[in-house]
Length: 281
Image 1: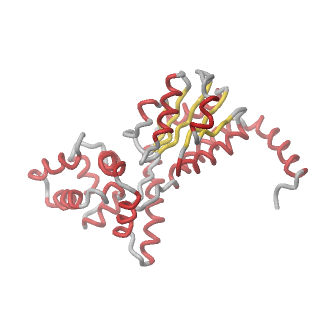
Image 2 (image 1 turned 30 degrees about the vertical axis):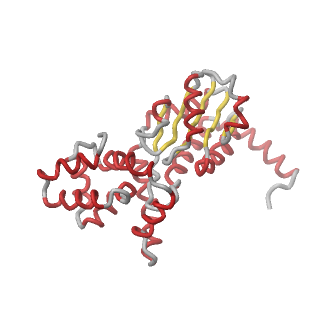
Image 3 (image 1 turned 180 degrees about the vertical axis):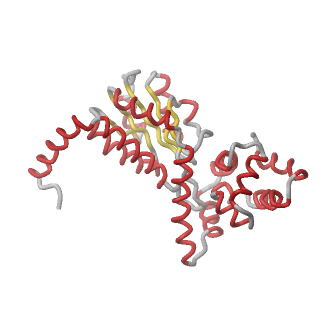
């Protein structure tokens, strides 16, 4: 749907009373609703969770996550950090309940990610990493935190893992990228141009590309051999990386299980080095 809000407006004449309540709220709050979970939208509009899901299917979506993707595509990418901060003040008040709601929204993000997890794609990602000659992790700005975590643990399991977060400093090292390599691109709205540029270059070089992003409308998806999505929406000035980190945890642990025998020997050697240099308190 090119314009979800226009589509909603056009369907209002044939909506039930409950659907009309949801439609009016969405059209009156186009910058806030894309960040709301189905439960939160139900609470805001005074309807049930099931009614919100039926509203999404009434519009021709497979469910609320798809409707949310369409709304985010037209709103989230355009919102500045300042605008998102204003939204957070509207959704999370200053009372204790506002704090609880932040935790509940993160729980909802993990639940949504689990429900939408493409297990076949996930297994392909694990096998690709196990077979890779070299792995590049591409992440910039706030997503750098996810990239650092992923690269830190993968380097214990695999031979060569490199983090790329500044194209200016590593561009000379990308020229020999080839079909034996795997490139993991991590980016969430608002998407970073340099991540997309490196990811598309990896596709040109026939490397296997794995995207870790928020939805299938992400600009990383056209260049991804293996798309993995994790819900990151939260009505505030930061992205919620709780669910993406859970996805990355699952990826690392799954690779570790496959490398258990060789990893055990490596880990014992590392423990000896750590003791020698008195690393841990």
